Amino acid sequence: MPPSLQQHPDPAWHARVAMVVIGAALLWPAMVLSEFKPWILFDLQSLKAAGGFLIGFLTPAHSPEFLSMVLRETWQTVAIATAGLTLALLGAIPATLIVTERLSVSRLGTGRMHWAASALRQLVRWVLVLLRSVPELVWAILFVRVVGLGPTAGVLAIALTYCGMLGKVYAEILESSDAHATETLLANGASRLAALLYGALPESGAELVSYTVYRWECAIRGSAVIGFVGAGGLGQRMDESTRMMAGGEVCTMLIMFVLLVALADWVSKLLRARLG
Image 1 (cartoon, rainbow, N blue to C red):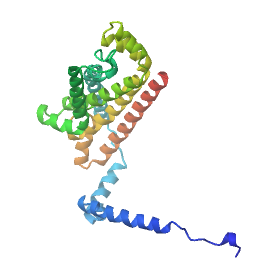
Image 2 (cartoon, rainbow, N blue to C red):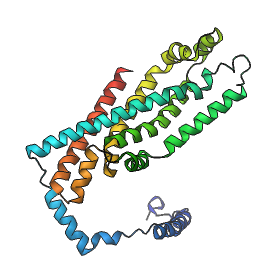
Image 3 (cartoon, rainbow, N blue to C red):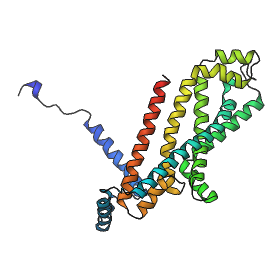
Image 4 (cartoon, one colour):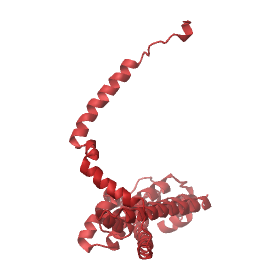
């Protein structure tokens, strides 16, 4: 056999085998602690229940009364997302004015903020951290206990979580934009709101709107998910049908959910394209 065709041993095979062994050794305790038991899927009782559900799933429910209910709950899901995002903006915009160092009046000339302004900014930053650290699903569970089942819990859950997200990202976008116009306006006596509207927004307005539209798309998906804990919308109805093992109803609502997310994605892409 010519030397060029001879198979040479891989010089790194020892290291690769060692990495696989070490990875398996590290993964095994995690699987044990998480009680991961994939063989349960092949249990006879589980297979029988899954088979019955899938047989019904192959025939989507399409009665006029049911389709009317699905359309109504789909509209409610969009309304929950839109109302929640609107409330989030009412909290995120003032928070952005506070936490954005570029809009600070006390740091003009010296480059250092007053201790009181710095303490206020740090406090608001921690509030935003708290809001976005708790998932909207957890907020929804808490509000369902407080205000009861229904869309009110979903709106409040999305509002709190997305307020923290929007406030953080808005501040980062403004901090990364050109500071010349903003600092010039502040130095000439303009208010912080005027500096934001006429100095920062023309520079980063398209990016801010694009991110807001993206968050609205995420809020639609989130409003469907939090419905599974009783926060209203299409997710709550899907959870009820799943508990009853009504595969046809679940299939119809799942199709509607996919279409809803696809529509939100299309609207989001269209608006972002218009914004350049």
